[in-house]
Image (tube, rainbow, N blue to C red; front, side):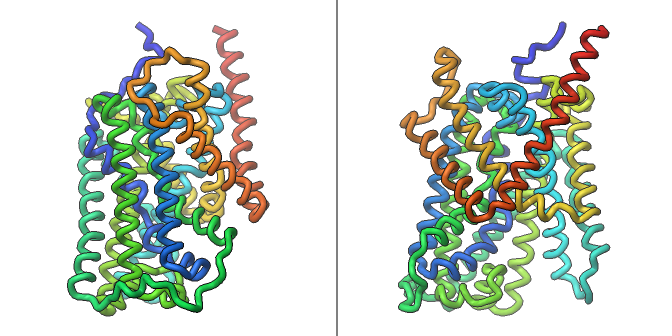
Length: 452
């Protein structure tokens, strides 16, 4: 009997709320929270303003999570926003979403994260020189060891994800507790300095873009919806609860940064390793190595989450006939989408070896904002077009929450196009580069059907 495309897919439902939450937390908590506050300290110069940016970013992410929860509960299948865009806007836009996920959304992010892991890991070793070849080898080793776990099946991948997330969160909490107990901080640092720069809305928006990048990944549970148990309850619980947990963790960490050092010192170069600067000030020079360990754990957890969830997009596309059906093949007792995982890891490996992922990552944030806004907009479209669609979970305060998310996204996209027209233009061009492939594949399928 032919499987209906409306069925929840052949992937077994084995992911509970805790594992799904670990995927979300690991996907979101990467390097952003440890590196971006220094730039905000330089540009905004006010602890209250900086904390407000992180709070606004949390509200935007929560608005997105509330909206995605309605879609995930209504369509508990693999694919995430690809599935929602295909349903609301048609297969072409769905294909472009999947194409973007493959080229820059997941694969380039995996490559960049793996190379970042190698760079931080090498700081723990007594080596001289840049070691480009060794960095590449370490990045590939991380990628393929994690890929091996996920190829082995959902059980091994779930165990790896839970372990990495618990180690990561535990290390972050230990870092803060040790600083508060043994460090010499001062809550008076939260009082703004007299020399703070004048307020600039442009600087505030740029800081918000940094924050939203640090929050990106709040929607990862949607990609695993076809494997989540009791999706009507678990998906909203995971997306909303997980995003709230990350928001609280981020606000606590930033408060800890300001307890450790005044904003003027956080704004002093070097800006990037803000967590390392705080650790050294609070606990001594060797504490910086512990922060490096935390960064390695954070990155490894994020890579694992992206390897896991990204492959489900291409699996769903293959099921729908938008890419070759070989990528819908599964293997093993737990029906692992073997070929889809391999496809993604092979492309990420090419990007690692070629070193061509950095600019793709710069452009990806802009493109992903567009697609997430379109996905949230699908809530509005489907409420009107399909009012009788079963919705086990409904976004509260509809239509204000999805409309708020869409409007904020439009402002961000407009700001990027105005401030950084080159990056915005290249981001759009990268997305539209999938159009010829869609047309070729569409024509190939039509010829194949006529021949049959």
